[in-house]
Length: 171
Image (cartoon, rainbow, N blue to C red; front, side, top):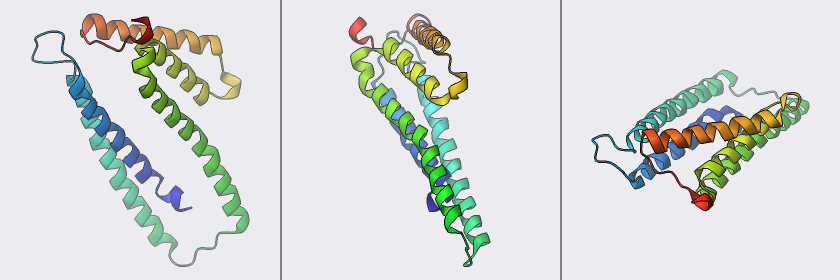
């Protein structure tokens, strides 16, 4: 039950770590043109906003946990059956989160090797499969959307923003 009470705090810390990592990664971006606004501008803005929102999530989560602790007091009477179903629900809800975390780690590890286009399309496809309900899975639609989205993003960053994205094996 304690993990459920602090789930916003855990989520906030995770997002804070991701946003700080993202912010630090922007310092390695190469500028292809001489401009006051480089390729790191928007990612730094987004990472900074993520940091601020993460801190807000952490603070609100701590406040909510404190209020729940005060409202339950010393007389907690959870029955064994209620605890069992709650722990099963926690495991059920935690599995997609852990798979998503694994997909994100795999994405960041493999993007220099396989490249932006391949890894982004693969990541989006797998994430759509994971998050969709079994009755709504349309594999062909997910594949088309993943390929089209990653291609569009790649084109915009290369041709409009002049930001070099990892090409990987397609070089």
